[in-house]
Image (cartoon, rainbow, N blue to C red; front, side, top):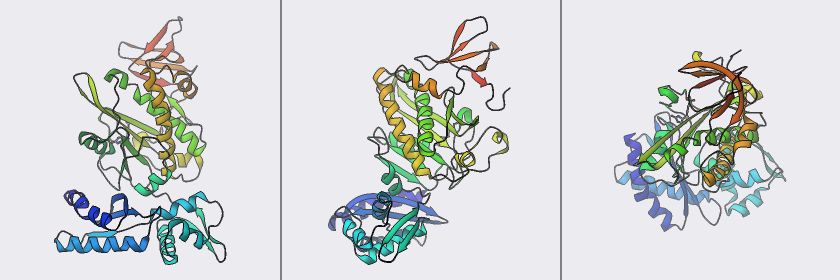
Length: 406
Ligand code: BTN
């Protein structure tokens, strides 16, 4: 971690002047850990396209500078990647000629060739046919800042984003960023969490390369009690995002568990910082089981993943993008009334408990009833056998047919 902070501090000092001197626009800087090595990856743009030859120059200058300052250790390797090529290839379903790529990106033939090799190394499958050009056959499940920027089509969520190959918890990263003044919509994404947090102090299993761990910063003007409904909004965003990205019929188990075929695919942990009953910031953290095929013993019977349900792997960046877009849409509706009234019917349509018998685990006594949907405050409406309708705010609701409950 200490090394990483060093690099971060040096980035502004060393990268920015070089970028400026060469008339580049700095797109992103990211830190990638592979084995024992930290990679500092600098994305720079020139005239709308990446010029790999120019970037090599940046890399070399950087290395020299770092060397000169006796800062770089053996473990540091500087690398410059080429996010520019993914986009034109993604836009086209057909072949794109090498010449077109050179022209649209403003780079040399050699640079295009190098970038193609680099994308292939990342796992993209690119078909190259003489006299036709290149065609993207299969996109890789890569999570990088460049990849996320290339797929995110949001207005404010994720405009500022950080990606970690490994971190303790994305909620911690988003909270740190919020403390340092990150703006509304700042997004932290990780490939792996070493101390993923679940609700009620539980651990959230977060291995490398399979699932989604994302947290973002919100700076609402409403009250902390109204903010408690944001987990429901996040749950809706996961359900709609998963439906959109995969076609799976995901549903919500009240209050915010996203489920597919009766098993949980997602967990949401919302943290909040307040000052004298005003919100400083809220951090919703979302974990989605995307390509996991194994789960810890204690959740094996009630957890599933998108891959297990679809029978094929899913690109994580597509799901992140769909969830972020849906969250923006629902949040903007929520903000108008600061309650669930504008989202009631959409929520009820997603509710897997709707019209089902539920068992309310009330500390004062367990009872059963029929779930009728939610009210404006996000409470579950449960009709008891005697016709009384209870607004359930807290307590666990176990649902017939869900998580093995009969
Ligand atoms: C639950 O227990 O159901 C909530 C789990 C929330 C997990 C996510 S993963 C991303 C974010 N970072 C964390 O440490 N926790 C949340």
